[in-house]
Length: 317
Image (cartoon, rainbow, N blue to C red; front, side, top):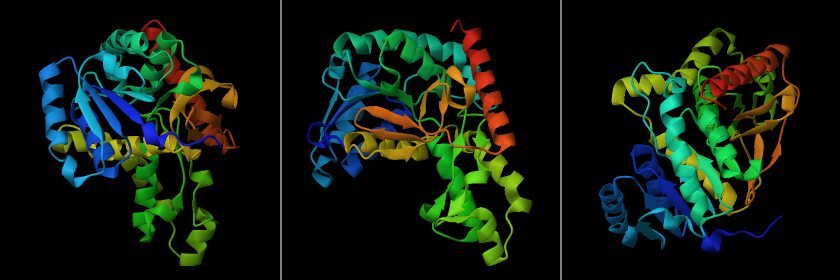
């Protein structure tokens, strides 16, 4: 295992909207990074956000927080792209495609001009499409261009199962794979609770989950729509998911997370970015797992990849 890079950990965030700044706040309060750079086309906003965070430094671990231009990307291990148009009520993530592709096409060359080998971590939506665009424009190795993928969807899945059984969500293991969006796949066949298969757990506690499966699926898949309807945007939970990915990189944890990455033949899928369980460490993604799925799950995953490929083609990729 490689040596941790935590002592000189630097993150640059492009985009100081609610997602970018919730992430910056999480980094600050959890002490994940020693340097944080904030970039926004509205430089005054980035400066104000940096000032606000800096005023809280007496309460947290030491961290250097600066606002500026793309020169901040120099020496950053991770550059996070959180810029772009936000998802509106009634709008799918894929509706954002054309607008946000153009923004990423503008941002990535500016990052690369100051840093030839960062890990680019995408959070802007539609995240799978934009990750592929960033990969192609940057010329970086696939393992170094990743996204938040379905890390948050996976946590929602585990949380809802934990509520059903009234058990600590940290003891629930299961994954959401594919697109971070409407075609994502909940892998029921691999769910276990404390190492016990879901079917065996149901038998042991005499409480079946089968009548509630569809409701759980709907709540996982549509969570963002419901939150946007109620409060216009989602940002706290995704910020914590991003912090978890960042921690895995800086501490070289080789954690298994469902980040988005380039498919290179997994389940017969190529040349599209989507989420599967991956080991994440200081170099980005070091391994992509493609263990057997139930037949219906594998078909749904291929369908998800097809939808993403069609959307990529619609914007010239």
